[in-house]
Length: 237
Image (cartoon, rainbow, N blue to C red; front, side, top):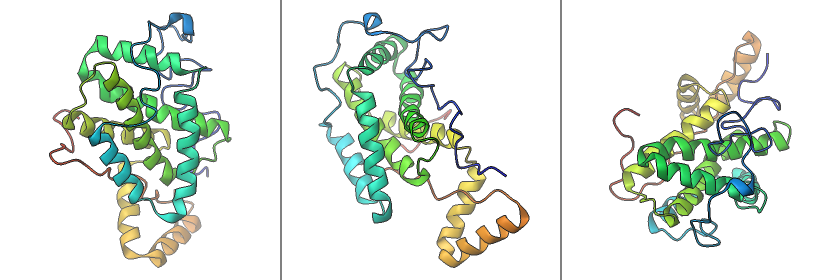
């Protein structure tokens, strides 16, 4: 039985990559926007590359402080690869187009759009390395991508509130859970097992293997550190 946590190399990631169309709110019909389609640059050069917003800095630094040493190298590799994609000369125009569409659609569409872009970056990287991306550090990296994307959007005039941060963090994790085919039940079981210790995790894995059952998901959805007053979720989410 295929590992439900290992996305197949040919599986389209959330928001399909630029080479297939649609990663960053692509135009209808599946055609990939070119630089000629991008509106006049709305943000100053370098916007989003270095986070300056104090709330976003707090989230990123607090998150990185919680990363286990065994995950750090993989996390840094994922973030480096994702940032190259997000702000490269070849794909940056897609972010510009996304910013324009987000502004036109209003703030209510930001969590969905940013979640799609951030999870799409994970999907792109996973395709590039033939479906071998490590799952747990991906859930830290997707929040880091979220912070950089929101920083960029902020420079185009979008107001990043505590409520928006809470909603967008949740949406990024939802998109990534869908991509890796991880159900809430799998996360709950993995969390319970992790609290019981390594022996319980090992015993459960052996039992699953013997029964041919799907393995428990890793405890792969870290809670992003939150600035004072941030809402964890919003009505309707």
